[in-house]
Image (spheres, rainbow, N blue to C red):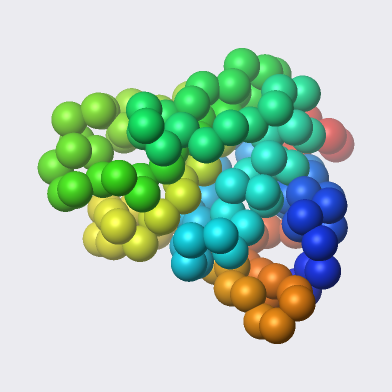
Length: 143
């Protein structure tokens, strides 16, 4: 699926729509250049799922947001090697809620095959958002 957004607000709204399709155990990997909108989209997802305001966990690697389905937001921008992910025990989070991973390309080969991939890029005055692996059936608890 490919989407285009023209503002921060539209990117947040798209994140909210994506959140409606996520289930406990889902892993979403975000890639794209610095400033492409990864954190902005995550703000929409977190807001919809937990009511919390998401912030970038760049200096601590992970922010946890409690909710009916907890959200675990990893930011790997400062990750120096894949071994650091093992050190923080990231795999322990995979089935506890929804895991959102910024800079997911930094742990290529470590992500489970079921990972939903979202790539963001800036083209002129808009963002191009490419999504792979997202099922469109909606959350199980919404049915």
